[in-house]
Amino acid sequence: MSTAPPAVNGPPSTSTLPDLFVSSVGDPILGLRVYGTDSVRTFPPEPWDVLRVANDPAAEVYINDPSVSRRGSSGFGHATIRRQGPSLIVADAGSKNGTYLEGEARGLFELRAGGVVTFGAVAMVAMSARTEAVRTRFMRFLGFHPSYLLNVEHAAYAACRRLHVIAHVPPGGFDGLARTFHETAPGAAWPLYVVNDRIPNDVAAQRAILRRSRLGTLVVPAEFWPADSTTLREALIAPRRDQRLIFVLPRVEPDKKKATPAEHYLGRELRDLAVSIDEAPLAVRGAMEIDRMIHTAVQEYGVPLGLAGPVFSPGEMQTLTSTAWTGNAEELDLTIRRVTRVRLVGLERAAELETIDVDSLRRWMKRRRFPLTTS
Image 1 (cartoon, rainbow, N blue to C red):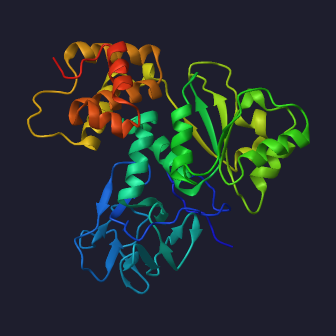
Image 2: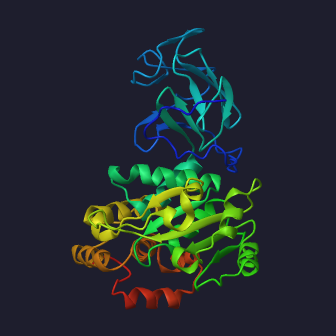
Image 3: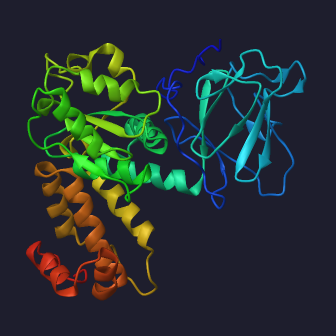
């Protein structure tokens, strides 16, 4: 029986759940990032035959941590990495503290994009262009500041593996986040069902609701599910899981004495079968987060030649900041992305990308008092 890695900031313990995220052929692994941080080990340009992982500056993947071996029983390094198509083959080199895949000790294994490998006590994510795009999307909702990175990592990990999610959210702040989970895996072509009314205390009716979202995603606000969690238990512990459950709980500020723990609704056994994330309100995240949202949107759409100055004027920045104090991350993200898109690529192209007609987009900009160009 394998032992769990001694990593403190590693991924949630979900090794019993199947890994449903499959890297595409054109999405190779670019490097490794320490889980929940911005600390990255980028791979050297190809071609390369083997990379050595060790607590030694001479190694191609240098990890300065006492739990990582400098030499193993089979030679220099804690482990070796070889390329196999878009994936990697990782081999432990007889290290003292072992090498783990998704929390399970392995001597030799395939590592795919989005997978988590742990060398000693250091958990690292296999980065690709696709997985980093997913991570950036979650940052828009959960925060860019380093204090939010572990939460963002948990969310990206759950999304790429179609894991169940317990989300602690501020009022009215989860629609876009739920869509991001759903669109990552299983995909927008599959059903997304949001419970928006109290569910009857009838097992047959509850199973019918679960069937509606089969192969897709079911979003369940805690207050709408009855006290009897029999059907939820069936879905969570099913050996062949064919849907994701997102269980939405109210967010309780840290200074409040009374919290609403997940086990109050699900019980400890069921809570441990899901990844828990926390969405901080924008009033907590602050104005610097808005700057990062704008910077990310500009990077995404590209800045055409000839654009002078910032995308938003100082007065507009003040408007966005005041909106953040009263609105939610989804409304603010939509506003920033849409206005940025209009100003960078023009009204007609932006309307095409937004899949709405030009007049509707022009009226939307006018209602929110954003001119088509910065003043």
